Image 1: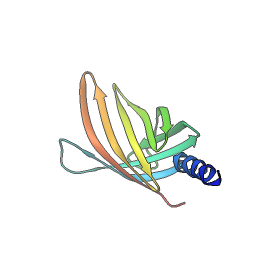
Image 2: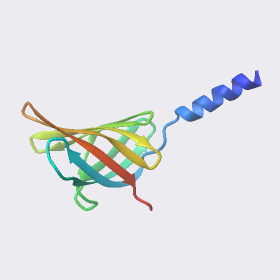
Image 3: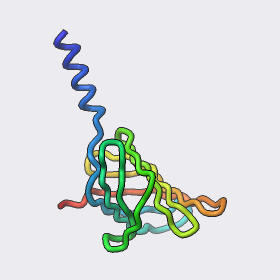
Length: 120
């Protein structure tokens, strides 16, 4: 019985998501282009809800909407003029990687994202 209880407790601890709150710095690499672009994100996580902003650096930020956390996955959108950046990311400890899509007027461009937590 103790073994079953320990297994359940251990499984619950493994499933609990890490907190993404804080500052993250890195870049995104467009799929059809060479080179990378800087990316700086600021997250505020409250359970399964994610708020914050993103941009090329800490001083140029744009708020995002529809932020959700599901386990280690972070999903949100950053409106940009007549288009929208759609993020689908995975957090592992102090690193976030994943996919970015820019959607505008029936056109979609893709990129890979790589971020690391900024030490406070």
